[in-house]
Image (cartoon, rainbow, N blue to C red; front, top):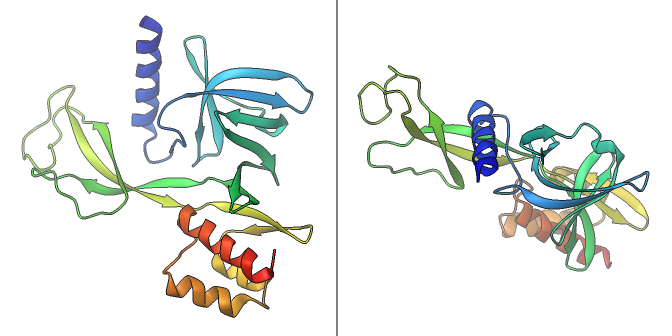
Length: 221
């Protein structure tokens, strides 16, 4: 129990100090199995910081940052598999029977503090507890903060994923729809019409998978 309290405090301190810079892929630390290129293996509790592209893991009572990510040959977390591809940590995702590698990249953009009524008009937001310094004004309440006060801040998650797909034995690196239009000019008009009709954007992983599914269909793969 003491170990859990120490780790929770360390993680909360990390999140409060770097809330604008660190965005974790998993809601909490997960058991992961790592196979390195030298065939060494390691079982650790870990999480992936998608903004800084690093792995944090628990060693004893310490929160550590992995410094040898490029030596990873395969990483599994539950039924999810990750590999290093083109220098990036990517998850291997099945998209309608076709493999797609996803380098998850998110950042939190501060959208302000919640008011007294706790209402917000932002979509896809994450609410974080942020420590207030004593004497500062509590947003929405108009009073001076006391030691230990917290405020709910609203953050909107932005996606900047990189995707890797393989067509006819050739790998393609994709971040934007324009990358697909340029790579596959023969089907670009149909793909563009599909994305526009369905209001799909590459800033959403779910939308991206739908776009890739349509691309593979148009290519006859």
